[in-house]
Length: 98
Image 1 (cartoon, rainbow, N blue to C red):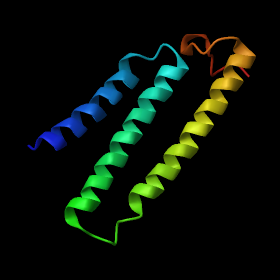
Image 2 (image 1 turned 120 degrees about the horizontal axis):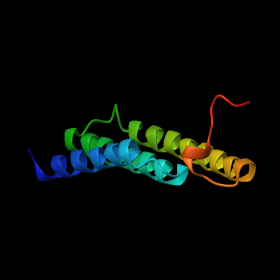
Image 3 (image 1 turned 135 degrees about the vertical axis):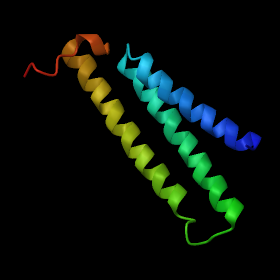
């Protein structure tokens, strides 16, 4: 396993572990998701450069655009949650309550 592949896999797994076990605040969950998306972007960019293919050259840019949309939607949900509930703690959110 190359050092670059090991670094990318470990950073993605750290984001996944952080998302799984450290879900106290909504902001920390969003940061873990953003770290995972950044790792995927770097991996796809390196994959495109390594194989020197022009067919998949736009794939990292599409992923980056989706990541930006995901980040803006997450921040909008964070602001809406903070305004309605007064906090961004995930423990205080009740999905069954209308």
